[in-house]
Length: 411
Image (cartoon, rainbow, N blue to C red; front, top):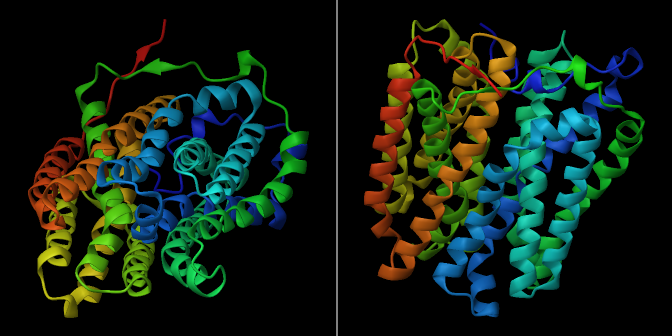
């Protein structure tokens, strides 16, 4: 069974004509740079959330919605992404996704609350589409170097997330002199650069005819598929609670904005190592039940420690959290491959797990923010974290069983 480098969405990415199939260093660099732009929208807003709330008068409920909106878009727009790729070609759809990320990020510079919500949704839609299509392009265009390219892709995703959490506050303070709106808009620059780099290849690409593309199938009545979806969604809910609220939580406990951003960045960087080793470990196990439960325990314990334990141990708990969340994300992707009998079913399970999973994940950061607003303290999120972790462990136990989903032909 293939490791993480065998992408769950690869079957939704048809093989291109021969002239476009030759990989090059420029193509590889383009895909890696695109991956960098799939996370800064999340991290950059979270570390500046106190300033945004103060200047706009935004309340805790609205702040929760703002941090949840991109995640909702990841779910909603992940589902049609494979169909769009079949209709217009994955390269062109990915170009459109980059354009959405660039425009949405740039419009955050307006500084007005309605525009901030609308632009965040636009950027989130682009990220969702790129999130689904990019791994398949990596596998398709680099079949003999898929493991290496997947590693570089993962590095780039983590680098984009950690860079936005680590450097947004210093940029706001030392470059833009306290103007948070311009700081948020500045993250459009990397997207604009790679947009120009990707455009020539995307515009030259053509989709395959309909008869040459795989038929769709349905998994919505399969219990095992729902357990895979649940594991993906619940680990994502816990991950985006950390991305959206860990920095404000640490600031509430006494750290300044830059220090809080560094703690979150360290946690995200640690995920890189576990993302790389988890698939090989998972595929060597007889099943993945204990693995999934163990990762849920790691995440729960470390997040509770960051809420209640002395801040002197924050770096240790950030590392433990990174190990748990990186392993859980990689295991979620690996389970999509391990539980599928063939490539076509893998594509459908990926769309179901990412689409439905990210919609499910929206409840995590939203509820965490609402609890903070109602009680005035992040400590009230502790029961939520425990419940989500228990549900994740249950889904991990079910999805980790050595079974296969059964797709039904679409009508």
